[in-house]
Image 1 (cartoon, rainbow, N blue to C red):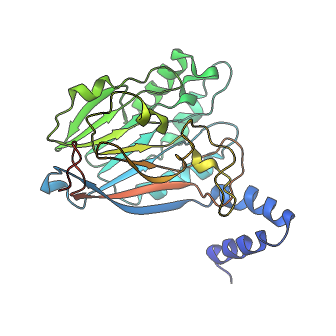
Image 2 (image 1 turned 45 degrees about the vertical axis):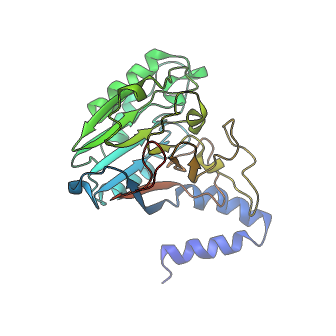
Length: 290
């Protein structure tokens, strides 16, 4: 009997053959074909006690009418099976809609979330601010629901856990983003920044540099033609697609492709949960390698 992996590979191979197969694969297979990406995350100043610890990044659940709840719950349970020490959500818990946010549906999905043994933190994304990204009442309801699930929501705030300094920024499109929290950081501490929209990293105020920045928002474009950039990408800086990017001043950016979607279509851009292994090293805040 063929395994699910063999079926998916066969479907992917068939997708190359005909437009109908491509459409079927992009609609029925890849949007729910979650990839757990494993990679190292080197941080200057990381305490010895945190070496080889696991930090899981989850982004863009987009709870709502377009994304199947059972798929999200299964994905979150897969993340929980990694037994993470830290969990970081990088925004867009919901998909925007008119009227009252569906916090009951969100709470139902969040019952399956993984909790880090040391910390579970989150930031908000543009969709968490409702229609036109401009409804603070929606954001407050989302933050409350996420908080009730045992997640600390950081809105331009800094928290230090076991020697790891986490700075969480509010959303750029909602006009709530500011680099002011950078002024409150301990420059000698291992630091990890969370933003939703990767365009944040190009805003003035990052001149001191602060190690790694984790982002979401792009979904990787959801559709990526082979050897070509994604045709639809919701960022000003079109190089910010998915994966790792070097930045000025000793910074590095990682963009997660997200778990959910806005429309149920993905091609050559599988949904992602990222499992980072924390290591000592990397580039410090003034750009010197260690």
